[in-house]
Length: 448
Length: 112
Image 1: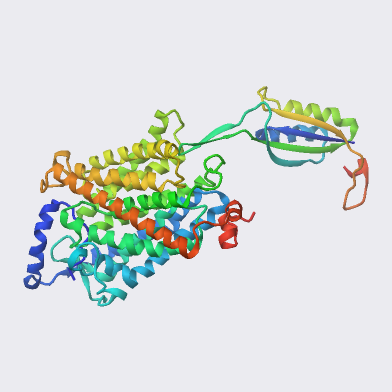
Image 2 (image 1 turned 30 degrees about the horizontal axis):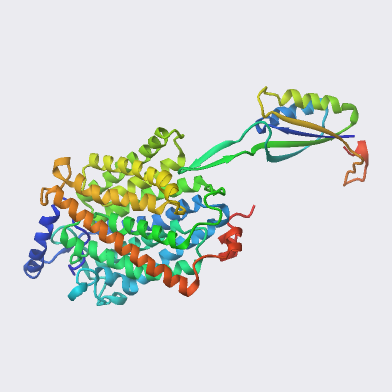
């Protein structure tokens, strides 16, 4: 049960880890039986629930607060429903596509086989490898942990299309998108036989798989869908920044499961990921507000929240691959660049990325993924041990980012047009004016 | 009988109410309203999206009183709600034709 192994990186250089892999495989038969540690297991169980907390209260409130009153329930429902759908697809065929045994032939490294469809062969006694030789965690725990990542990624995409996309279209889109975009990219980046993993791409907790992937998909989806009626002339201010603030807090706390949990063990690397998730985020929140001041605005609550998310996104691929000071720089740079992306680039280009999924997750994810090569380097105090020269690591990162952008964009075009053909994409003009809460769900969020 | 409508700054409501109690006003109706006059609204910015709100929140008070005390009521409101800055509000006085207390059926001044 060693075929599933999340990401490269860690204290070892990626190249060194790659070099060690075949050795593991050979030694597996001879080596003493791997052990499952109760501490690791308890931490991974906890981390899985922390990531769930990021979704159903966290993201639902963060996104929900940002829309108008009339669309609050539709956002919370869409986020919750696609997350639930992702969980079911995960145990049907998602897990095996992402972490099952690899295919041979030209799709080798891009997608797993269906050998573990319906979780075939997974039992309470089966285990998967961690990053430490001889240490394993129960496979069901790993299945749950990775399940939550699929669930949050598809929910993130919706941020750009809310307030106008139909609920039925969201569900069809989610099925196709998870199948042709998320599961293969998760395999490429995280499975031990995936193409990016083998190339030594560093993605500790999912900067590429989760954030670039969802951000780029969100951009493509919102461009195809078109703008909300009245955008950008009508007032579309967030209806409750209080809820957005609560959601931000839940996301930050939950993100420790996401990042520190991605160590797959309760150890020092998890500790490194944890401290980086504290300080990169702190820098992100403050530097976004600072950027607002530099541009002559007031430092805002939404700016603070947005900076927190930008910092979290940027530190995700670097969580276990950076010193705390590298993480601070990464969080600060991501916050300033994401601020420019949402407040300057978006109005200049005119697309209606309603909740700035591309501006924060897409752009922040790219800064994080490419910046990880830098902060991981020993020259900048990172834990990389010089396994790959900086320039070579940068190239690997950029290749992984570019491939993900293309894959996500093409996959999203397909998924959106499938949804359009089956259900139609947009709610009626009347329904959009009246609000999706009533038009799609027959309820109001607030009955005073 | 007179109907006195006053639009005032929201934070002045308590002071106005106290001043009116001293004059002998026994009841009033208060509504949260929005509007604009010389006072301009504010600009809000959410991630770079700017919205200028030209409506500012105000409190509308409606009082029906005996014509005999109407001048004193107006003076009391004017004194209590005054800050000297634009946006302090306005007071309107109208004649009232009839008043009825629903519980007893009393009419006009006795109904106030």
